Image (cartoon, protein in one colour):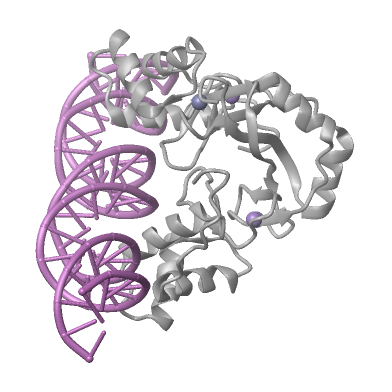
Amino acid sequence: MSATDVRKPILTKQRRAVFDVIQSSVDHLSAGEVFDRAKETLPGISFATVYNALRYLKENGMIGEVSLSGGPARFDRITTRHDHAICEACGKLVDMKLEIPGSLLKSAIDVSGFKPRSFELTLWGTCSQCV
Amino acid sequence: MSATDVRKPILTKQRRAVFDVIQSSVDHLSAGEVFDRAKETLPGISFATVYNALRYLKENGMIGEVSLSGGPARFDRITTRHDHAICEACGKLVDMKLEIPGSLLKSAIDVSGFKPRSFELTLWGTCSQCV
DNA sequence: TATTGATTTAGAATTAGTCTAATTATAGAA
DNA sequence: TTCTATAATTAGACTAATTCTAAATCAATA
Ligand SMILES: [Mn+2]
Ligand SMILES: [Mn+2]
Ligand SMILES: [Zn+2]
Ligand SMILES: [Zn+2]
């Protein structure tokens, strides 16, 4: 995918089902959870297709992915820049939309020498239910 | 581990070897890489022991762990708060010590309602070698 | 030295994710 | 519409990462 690539993603009924599952959940679902829910509308869908669809949708910017230690990747209905808080006791993942100061981002770019694509602040701690 | 737990970690020779491997590398090594290097000083060490040691050292705050999508967990010799930049082309992981404004952290705590333990800014993009 | 609990070990098991090859669906050409 | 080419889907094998199990070993101390 180059920066000039403007092809519209092809949504087969399987990809649509996977996309709908992710869009309709507030949670950040794992591939297995997506598979279980996609089967409700498309009983014949295969595990491989769910993985294929997740990769395709991600490559086309239609879903996000968040990886956390000690568990499978989770997929995100929100594709705009945002942040996460992770409860180390129960695994809860909370979305946050923080205002990251431009000076902080600039500092990260300067220090790393990277061309930035995205950035995120992650907070690890304990959620209110787990105190 | 409670907040009042002050037991000193027990370092067997296997745990010491694993710890030394991580301390002596600037890179963020995977468990497999740690295993290979630990075998150089302790040829009989087992894979299970490396994993056990990594968990133990992490639980005792002697090493850090960073998980990234599409690859094994990587271990970090730096245990003080710091940030990472990840090259999406070659996988390079760069340490950064950024000054996160207190107001940003406060905002994250307020929005999430979490009791914070740690936090990190992650920058995804392209490193200078990969332009 | 004997006891005992912790640690290590080899290898089996599990989990997450990818790959393969055959089948099916779809879009465009004839 | 029918044919053909290409892409997508499928089942299941495969791989990689990590955890588990149970026996053996080690280390502290009674
Ligand atoms: Mn999110
Ligand atoms: Mn680091
Ligand atoms: Zn929690
Ligand atoms: Zn790179």
